[in-house]
Image 1 (cartoon, rainbow, N blue to C red):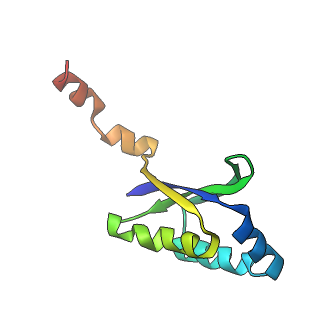
Image 2 (cartoon, rainbow, N blue to C red):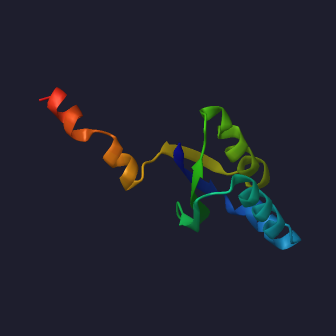
Length: 102
């Protein structure tokens, strides 16, 4: 199942990693392990670093695998939301659901 993984990282720990030269290695390891379908990074919440990743999980027990590296390396706040592609939405059977709840 696809999840949208939203990240918010306070600047202090990320800046420390940037200054000591470890940020690229840490981000690289996290992203290599997560193998996101897509990843985008940007500023959030008035100056914090943030990002979104699309990750695939077979079970919610995998949430720590995706979240803990961000917690441990960057003191991040992480939020997950299940998401669908247009093809997933087509398979949902919206017309039959709507008919049931007329």
